[in-house]
Image 1: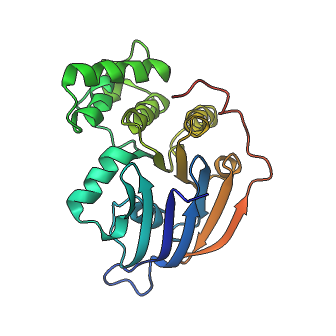
Image 2: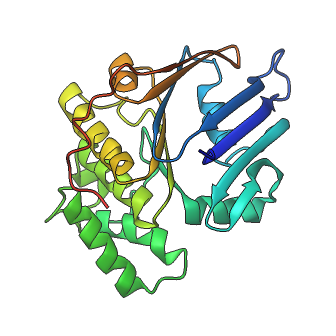
Image 3: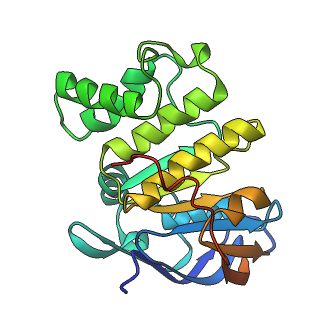
Length: 242
């Protein structure tokens, strides 16, 4: 199977740092799978995610992504092209959601479609359906300060999927949540995988990693283990998903 994303020789050196944040990382990610990235603080987890997603340009190496327009080297794209790729093909769920506090839940989700040129009425209608789909019916017009942490993460998950993103990147998406809410958020992310999307999640939590199909562990910017789960939990795959 052709990888959805394939990194070769991926390295990242930050100015002034005595060692690389990433050191010649090779990684293939198959479509429709879930991958957990683990490691101690400073191991390079978030840097790897940001380089794979085109948020950061690596110092060296390639990141081949196979999307709607064919295969491109994300690392070689200019800033505008990487921004378009993130807008059209990728979804993001971070620990703090990176949502806009001044907007409502509906507006936070709709803006992802509006950036792609979709008229506001249509974008908001689509956003409303996603919020209902993810259990937020009746909360569409609340601002983030009026939502719980779990509800805000559901908004972020809706925003990550509304564009039809093939690949979702999640950086510690359950890190600030209680265990029950963490399970609910992970259920939703794994439901997206069951619907054919691909998930890459950075986590410190072994319970989160165990529910993914595959786990890589970083140390000092290098992958030191790459293991497939004996049996990934299917509790997230039975839900309705798009």
